[in-house]
Image (cartoon, rainbow, N blue to C red; front, side, top):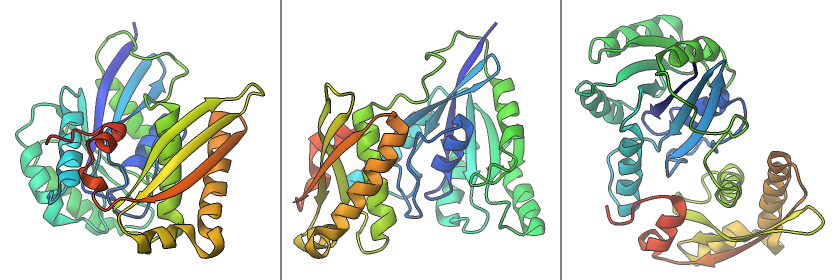
Length: 296
């Protein structure tokens, strides 16, 4: 008898949710960044454990929304938690972000799903404050299990995966054995480029940027041709992305192309161009491409 269930991974922005999902799946399915709110839409990662398939929903960080994009992301996070067989609350014990964590705990306390508390970054957090935090949070929400892990190194993740697998109901698998994500290759390619934007530009480029897939063509020689549009809000941001003589966008493209070739297992031809659109965050079409609800 096989088991299969839905596991929602939620938490404040930048708690390490995407890194944890990648660890559970065993390969990269979600982009990561030190910049908060990197994940924008619900991304499904698919993890196997013996006869159990766990469909992991990597949700955007839950925070107080101010703009349309913020509201759409927060709604996507809570929708990802609906009908889950288990909810994993991931907490960064170093930063904590209590202004976002406390309202999240209040809402979780009223939900009926089995809840698991996971305290991340045990490789850098002091032990005594970590235990005190676990006791405090456990007093606010009824957690079925509490785990201490490092999503970055994988420490403690195997034990947590065992426990989550045991919670899954008996059911046929939802996806083929070799599938690790529900994201299309077009979307994954755009996400990889967006990750490189964050990694290479750090604080130079504000959060208001997007990568739009334009063309994804399989060539007859077995390689793939990918065209993407990087959208920014102001001309000054376009200059930052391009860099002197186009050096920055060339470096971004080379790094993204190399990673995509490794993930896809084929040669990649990546073409990037930058467009300025002051109101891109109000564009319904961009929301649909990201898997977000524009109307919220």
